Length: 466
Image 1 (cartoon, rainbow, N blue to C red):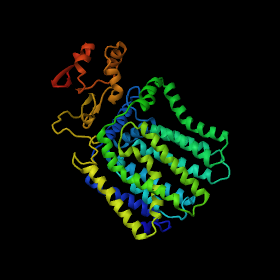
Image 2: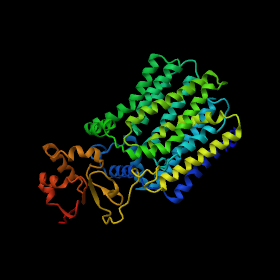
Image 3: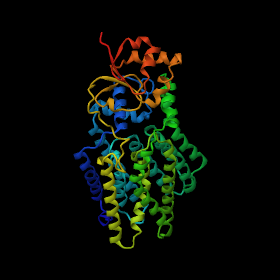
Image 4: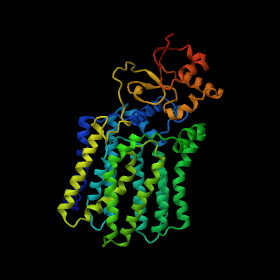
């Protein structure tokens, strides 16, 4: 397979696209597990299309541009997993082709070939959760665009005002996926060390980064919802974490091989000669990309393989060097096929393995309740869990429990009680599922709500008709 993609011919672009589609077809045929964050994004899109305002009427920390995309998907396709997967395939195809084209057109590698695209496809499919349209996947596209512009600047004797585009693309990526904000340090370091950028041009790149963020904040300020935007989006980036020890175990099993290949590929470059100065600088830019990606881990809202899509460009880049460093071609092919086989095994083990499997991402999967009878109702869940929303609709702003609990658990605060009552009146739920055992205290503080609901089974309150 490596020999085939070493051929520098235009038709290889179509070969990459066909390979990408083929890599996803088995999963589409068997069906992929429903994801908790995927349902959450769908609910955000639904609520926006009902006329509710993000962050004030919808308490969730999904980034603004991602929320806008999910609203568009809901408008056209409704709650469709297939639409998320198809659009993710299209975004992935763009990234694969753009990454390979930039490397070839800029002569970043000693020889033009399509191995970078091949490696990108392999490492973009390390886990089944990478097949959906996640914020990190969308944000990564704009980071790649920034990479393309940085490479262009490094290849010149002097930097130009196109550096604004670099910062702007990273700013847009941040509005899709907040942890991408750390890549402004990658861009600054790359321009500082490997280009002739002046202080003015560094300032221009920084302004480009701030500009889309400022416009977004200004929009919410003019709309009168900046305080909600600040609390439910900006502050949540630094405060909300949903980590579990089991997540780290499955994550390590999934990512150990790709990360090892990337690191070995980088280490192999130490003893390899034949690169021109420009190519060496590009390698160092990619090294900085990988190091910057490590910084983004601390800002990830939850741990899952999909969050590490940010590392794919760097891993794919150094993986090419790893497999090119083999003196015997047959050994490189054998190593690649063995690595590919292990990645495919872990992929299907994570998606379809039993709960005790070492690679099973059980905390990421949405578990449908077999005996659950409530369907097509407006539901409010007090506590962690999204499975009750699977066949129902969200009610009230309290979609994300990590944000909602600061108000719902502090019922001794009079302002919180008034706010809760107003939110219930604006979007009254038909059913309240009380996992956090807050309903008794809530009804005691707000008797008007207590008169509207009746407990049918333990922790389930149904709205009284009439």
